[in-house]
Amino acid sequence: MSNHYFLAALLPNEMKKSLWQVTQQMQQELNFKSWVYKEDYHITLAFLGEASQEQLEQVNTDILHDIKRIPSFTLKIDHFGTFGNSNKPRILWAGIEQSHELMELQKMIYHHCLRAGFQLDRRPFNPHITLARKWRDEKAFQQDVLSTYRTDTQQSFIIEQAVLYQTHLDQLPKYEVKKQFVLG
Image (tube, rainbow, N blue to C red; front, top):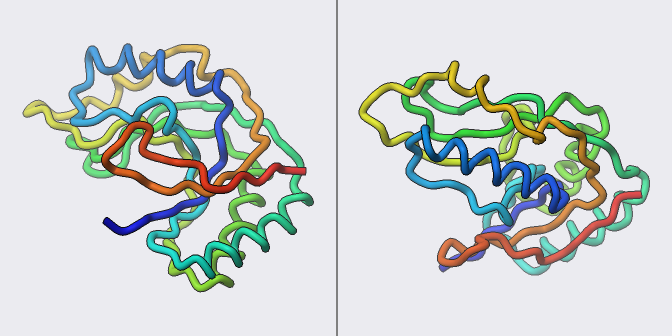
């Protein structure tokens, strides 16, 4: 099995617990095929896919050098949404309130990944936290139900680190931290 990597903003444990609580409520009503394990919640900044050791070393060195110029910052989850067909979504996610600091962090990481030779997604950055995958009910998904979920996930939380994750599809948690980058 090949190794896939990605860079992400690391969520604080308190936020992971809050999201886990709301997804436990959602699972009672929403019929998605799989729900993301709480330790795997993150905000993807760049998906790398397969990577050589040289590429990983280069991107790690470049990010370590530049990440010091970005201070830790506050984020807030402000809504829930889906990707894919609105009647049969492929992803359920928690959306992040717009943040200049998060955009700057993503731009810096994206730039260094391109310099290291990675082929990255060219779509605009849409920060979110994936909660579940693949709607599997015969009935159409009702988007308006998402506005009914109110928890302490609307609280603010601080991003202090970015991380390089390696994916392991056959275990929980699926994502293993390979490198940590402390902001500021």
